[in-house]
Length: 169
Image (cartoon, rainbow, N blue to C red; front, side, top):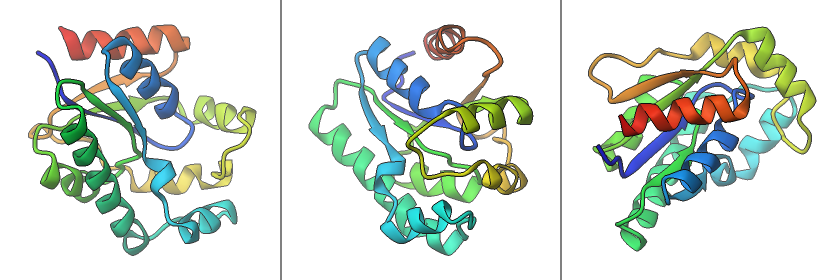
């Protein structure tokens, strides 16, 4: 099956950006980064170690859905591959409301491994201290949500290959 709207989701530090970029390259798709659409107040809050509320996320999620829809209108033949946390069902529902064909690739992994990756990365606003808050609100995808789960314990190449296989088999 050829998916046209792919959301690579999960908590911060799980590898959403690198996997989404890799998927876009391998599937001849267009990459979008949801973090780039956060209002400055959201980035400031997270940079200070403050978790976002649902109210803070609402306009951002609408902006994400709008950006994906606009990209799909511009390049309808190419998959739109987006890195977006999409931690709760109602967050995913906002995206699905605008993009009913969305499929979610949920990157999952051990908390300690994710924390190590967060500490090792540079130039990102999200501190490792917010990892637990994201894990606490994470809602697993339900059976009625189009999705695949990919474990991030392997190398980047292994994770990317597993994601590609899940989407193309």
